[in-house]
Length: 114
Image (cartoon, rainbow, N blue to C red; front, side):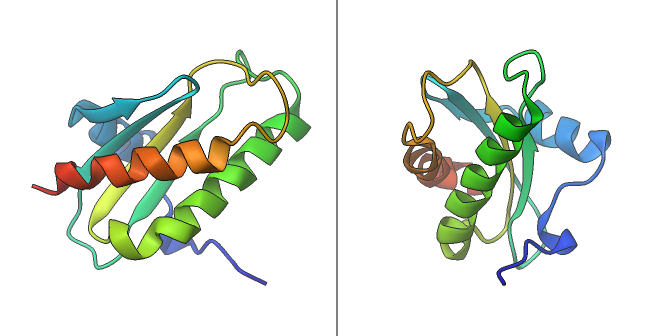
């Protein structure tokens, strides 16, 4: 089983806020991605999928699984960055290419490295 270890997650509101305040971001139709350099050898990820945007918990969890998988696929290129991915608006349908969209945004965030 592939795990998403605690060391690869952003945990508290302060960590999320620090990444968002750093103001290095890119957006697409459904996602907004923020990045901030960190002093670790691995990247860390934080996800924001608001109940206001996606009411059902089962859908929020599915979206988070897709985003974590996109992060896992890009992890090697993202070393030294803290990332926050935020869903901007409701998805029209399941399987809408969200993971591909997230992967593209994460690649664009390489410029935030410093």
